[in-house]
Length: 506
Ligand code: SAH
Image 1 (cartoon, rainbow, N blue to C red):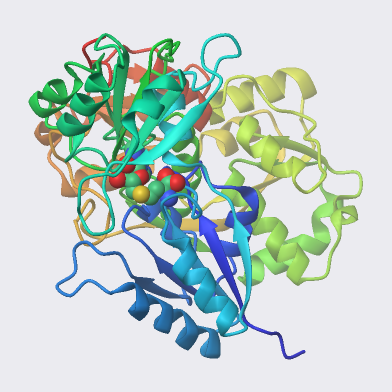
Image 2: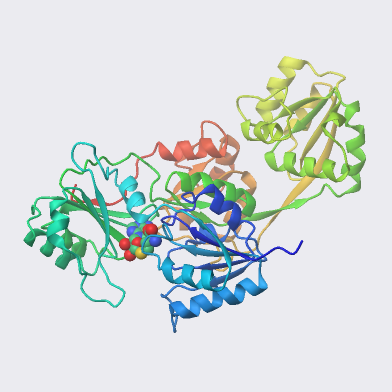
């Protein structure tokens, strides 16, 4: 089918990857070409297929910023080459997003388009500062205003009418003109005591909130070096209550493989933390090897099959799919697994594990299993990493089980951890947490980095085995997860009080 090209005008939200709509995400993941603006973070751009053409068309950070007509021309040009073209704009594309010019161009060139709404900065900032924008008793209107005109002139607003509205006023692009705007509002009979809140970089790790009144907010922002992007929210009766989000704004360094880091990053972003990916190793799939291919048809002969990680589950089921097997090849074999995450990965393939120990270590799995099932003479197949320790095998064998171990993947250290070109961040004083989800990650990480370098950073360990490995190299973790999963690791960090995210003048 000769598909017609389509332009998707997408509002990406205020910057945090989690604050984009599902529809927008689906389109981004199959885009052929993305033309994006300044306030679009790497989190979102990483979701675009590697093969897609990414074009920065923002006005900042370029020697010769593109004019609107250049952007229009580029969109038309790309629609002749690609089918799914995304025009990605910050917030909502229809609010202070120069959408009129681009829409007119698409219409006059007869190009198909779809508009996907986004969370505008006013909504995001209000949520981040715990501010209510309307209230049925005290604020029946909310007005969005630009503090900056296209030609850089003073804003031409009827300040008197605005003050009379008795609602909430949100100024976009107001940092440079804040003093002037506040002065004009007070001169137009808005009470100088009216509450004013400025939120810069709403939803992002470098978010800053400054609270004051119309009379003093500009000065407070100057003192606190508030720079764009920021919005100023003004309202006499604005109800405000800051949310308790312990990881908000904290920089968390992740040391799993890149796929593991990506899943971890999503969970951190949902808590407002800034996830920094520093992959220390990569996974190599061994399911193409003869030994794995040979064992799959024989699985029904085993009494028990053990999975020890979600990675193992995913790779194993991908291999069975390649061999055209459906889940019935397990026949009556029962399934055991280490950890809730492995169990969840199995559920994705419609399999409920028969045995999942509460404490997720090889030792506890073996002890609990032996006590409950007395496996003497039973045939057990362990599908695991080539690097796994021998504890589980040894314990099962000592209980007289017939154990067969098959490696379905292995891991290899990546050279030069935390190298600025290879990872998103290097170890510096801005990192709040350093996290370890496996002993292998600890070993890989500290092969390149001296333990002394991380003395000032809080360290989170996923469980006792990782803690032991850390201690052996002279690093004492600040916290150890109660439940040995990524969720448990996050929960452990959340329980520690660090300095709160900056809020000035509360
Ligand atoms: N279409 C966008 C607005 C673009 S104009 C939207 O709907 O949000 C750019 C202005 O938006 C910035 O100068 C700032 O005032 C505001 N803005 C965008 N992202 C922001 C953020 N994360 N935090 C605070 N203000 C933001």
